Image 1 (tube, rainbow, N blue to C red):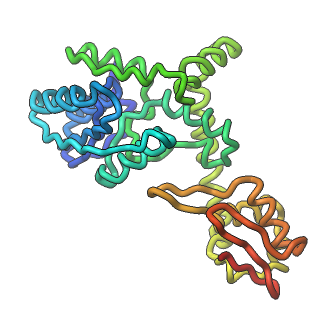
Image 2: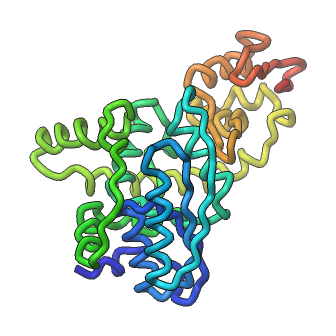
Image 3: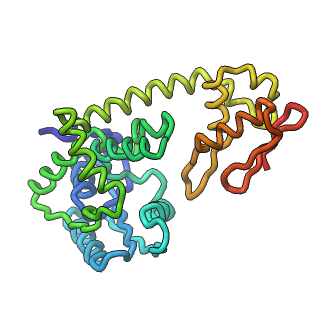
Length: 290
């Protein structure tokens, strides 16, 4: 099987940064990037959260020496009392160069779609990774990538936390997806990936249609005009205008927050509270966000 045909790497000779944990997905990323002729710098993030994390770093260094690739190890400390997955992800983003490629596969894409569905995400949450240049393996299946790595003679590192039911993604991977496959009578991962592509295309079209709306700032809009917009158009505008950012991620407002904001725009209430200690208010047909 020609895995490279289903990858989305930049042109051969391009210098790239790769996030390599030592697991099969990231090792597959490294091998395929080298096969494609990319100039690679490997980055390994040691969270020091597992007893074997130091061995993982040593293994990645050895693999890089074998292939003549530069390797940089980043040591980070994550607060284990909080949401470890989210905090670890944020820590990685802080130390990895912008545009670093990761080994996310089609299976990761499908899992993310389901996770986003369970938290009530909008269209953007149902089309993750599509057209994301940092996810060049999103067209590959995880099992095919693992067979490729083993066939290369490398023995990937094993992260036992990938089996822990304490993490929601693991439950989606090991419990929910098998049940969905059984109910559907087929492998649903390609279906979820195809759905994500369709949603992405529809979202891009909506973005084009609403380009003029998004040029209207929150405090520049006239609530009398906004109230005449169709609900879907107004909701889409509010979701963009009320976004928050943290650790280089953008978070849209919840459905409840949008519902409260709609009441302010329509004059049903004069103000409402939003996440992050923010307050949306209306005065003389104008909005303010404090």
